[in-house]
Length: 192
Image (cartoon, rainbow, N blue to C red; front, side):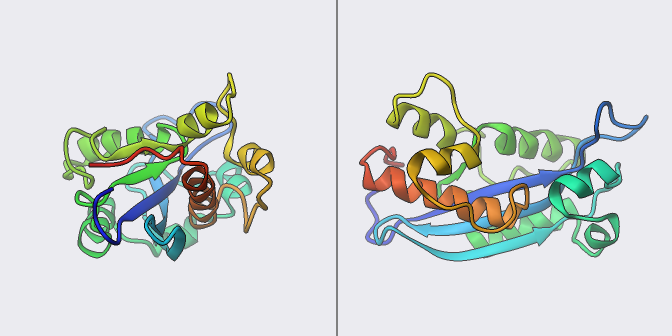
């Protein structure tokens, strides 16, 4: 990264989910976007954010509430997916800043939901251009054959799990800690 103060958005989404197949007519939709801004130059997490998103074609199941702690009543107070994408662009520089997530799920979910809702993909095109799969970078840096889940990666790196696992805001914060570990190891790729 060539900028004096290079910012990276670390994002983790939670989406509606079920123990088994979704009910007829339901699809997995983003219900929470967790975002931690990392100052790559200073090697520190500078802010953490949470955007609740109200699903349009599904409801939060009991299984989803057990996993994430999010309830239907809570996400109903959230913004639309289109408004959430606007917030990412206008307030957090999505489309201009590089971003990372743990694996490809988050990027693919944004691509899928953007198409389904007729909303511009907030991170610019092509969809992979500014995205880094932190899970793949971590596995390569640590010489692992299998890519670990975020909580396992924290244990491998000797870092604590802060907050609740499967809560977008907390997971983004923890993934950002792993990004900092990778930066310290010289393993984080430069983004043009």
